[in-house]
Length: 177
Image (cartoon, rainbow, N blue to C red):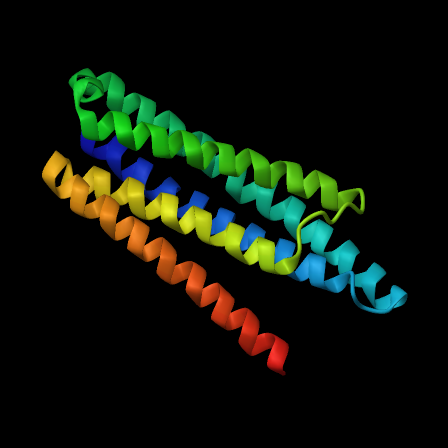
């Protein structure tokens, strides 16, 4: 039984993360569309709103629900994991990913009402937050011990710095064009 639940968990984590990664890309394009002439802006905004709503409601939210349900089921099947430090830390990162998810949901609502409070650069950095959380969660789930977790944490920090530098280099490259 456990193996089936684990497979479902992994499948829907992949779907959930795909939705989170793509929704923020849509936010970036939707935000950049606001700089277009009015006619083009209206057409693009209407299309992005449809795409965001469908992605969110058809893929991202159901995948998040099934991911969490499968995760809770696995903890029900193996309750001793809740006593493991790696699992406790992993659950903190999962909570962070859920917060990220609901912040994205609030961004969808804001953009639908014409509120674009974050720049496309801010959104590009925001997109990398999900990547960092995913790395942390996967490393904790795979490595499972404190010594490896320390190396994993240092790796996550280094990875985060590299990603942020990459975003800045990309911004510099884009502004030169």
